[in-house]
Image (tube, rainbow, N blue to C red; front, side):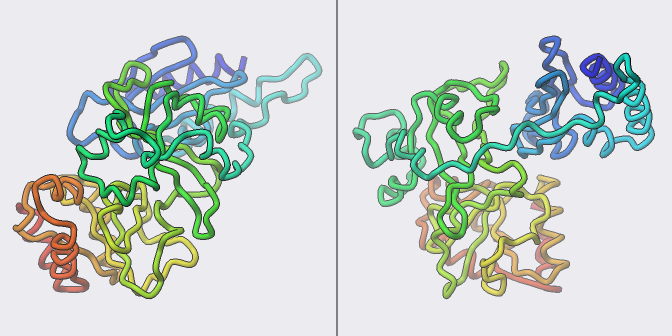
Length: 343
């Protein structure tokens, strides 16, 4: 009965969900109502409704938003949520005892030992002709950073060691391990090689959390030098070109800094995307809070991020110099933002 009610309310919610479609009786997909999904391709669909043990849950493979169906309905429509709760209250057994009080998240996985990384090789241990190494070279990732990247021949099989409930493909991926400030493995990001698919849709990056209740993952925390300026970027690969950089894996709540990170030394260098609503909103939030933000100059117009700048022939040291020169705060940052958004 619980699954029937969930299906009914997913259908009631579906007119508000862009490109919504049932793929199977227990699986539906749409564009993410939280992050908006891809800003470049309106055809990408990476938000999924999936059934587990008779109840539905949701997850976005773009922003990593993950919760119960009830929580999503409550977020989107308070009135519909009250109807949903009322209908569930009528879902009783023959003795009149309420069977389904409230959905719960899938079981919390045990925090894995860092030893799970021993199951997959580092890029530095692979031959120079290996596809993962060739991909890293194609992105001009410094060879000295190959020790920070791993390779999984079967991503789903390896991910099951961290999260047995994860719904990912069994394709080949470069694995980017994510650690806490103290060096404990907190998750990983898988970067596709070739034409990786997820439910019929390409998903370039898939992020897995070891602890679903642990909040947003930050990449590179274990390598932070607290005595030097710290550059915060969006993507892990971009951070590999910086002397002291971390990636915050998502733009939601950019002011929420992990404990132990020196906030007074942070400079935010988000992607150079003046047409990206999420990027612009995050930068404006940071500026209003008095944080130091890199407002990219005309020197890199049209170049999306740090990795692309490297691919365009700009040396990493020069990029760090550009970041220093373009770092602003307060009124000067607000004025520079107006010019940057018109680019």
